[in-house]
Image (cartoon, rainbow, N blue to C red):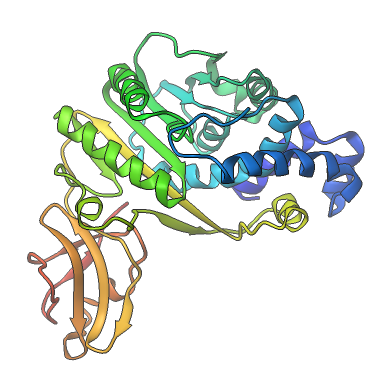
Length: 360
């Protein structure tokens, strides 16, 4: 069973009724059983889609049924993003001090702890008491519970250093001044070598704000290094060269059964997941390599790919006559792959340039 399926199954077992859980184990859950959750998800979706960036949601998760519905549908989706990004957060210390800010139904905590083995002191923070209740339910009955040396589920961030801070879908509701205050509070709590993961909805407006926040962090804190998606210390060239482009990725995943069923009932389509995320580390060196920002495209003059690295941002091209076994990894790359080139890249990639795929 995949991590995503395990998380969905765990949520279904604890949230659905006894009859609903029995149906889930056998196949599709009855529409009558799901009706109340579908209604709650429709209410939440209307808030999200009509939300103005930088403004608070009208009511947020204000009812217990909304928190449960959110967990059933969004928990596997958001956990998949954490699973993808986890290799960047290495090495993690043991024991681990983890702050899951805007934890919702403990999405990031469950996804991370199901894939790691170290004992963890976990602090979950969320403004919604209903989300905190669901997080407590899911964490307390999870197989990871035995590895939690301490579990705190709070409304506000407590003092003390953290080895990893994950803030998911929380900055979009803050204005610029509030965002900067919040980021400063995160950075002030990072232990030496600690990681900060910021993740926002895979939408243009949210992402461009996150790109701007990334620039502010790196201007103000020389001790903070960017790990993902790029390794630049200067201002984001995509942000300054375009009013529309946004740095995001898309995950192809095996959608778990209840997620597929809820998609059908809601008229949604989550067979692909767009995401925006930035990862920083305190007190580490900038990594080498160039990130791939778009899939390779065949054009009349050759194969083009948009790349970003410390020394270059822009399209690189392998002309038809320059394709070779040494530069083939560039043709086969995926978005956010990290590649090394045997010499600096500026526009065209010749046949003798050696391209290698690096770790994430």
